[in-house]
Image 1: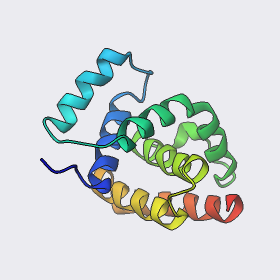
Image 2: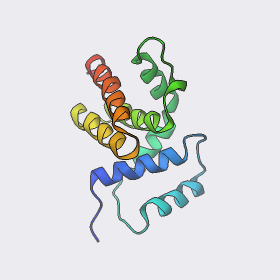
Image 3: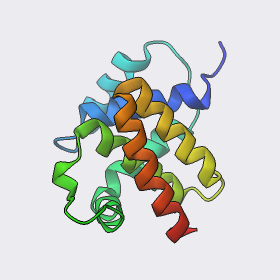
Length: 136
């Protein structure tokens, strides 16, 4: 069996993180989500490392995202889907230097198009472009 593509892994990461956005899950709950989202698809170590990294860094990620929002916006105003996508992209920008920032941003935009709507994709792009300029 072939290992799934990196984009498919990001889709699965989004789905699992979206399902756990209200509270950090227990290990057995994560196993159930992996099974529900991926079924028998094979994945490499990127997927669990990415999920665990985002879950373990949410406070720092939210602080970083908050610093790059326009005046009048707060993290609480961001939709759950957009927040999960932003957390994923910011995690890649901060903690995965092997991934070019353009790839992290492009993948986040694609996820927003797939799981949200075109306006959300524009919002995600705007936040991340600003973020990448400052962080990189």
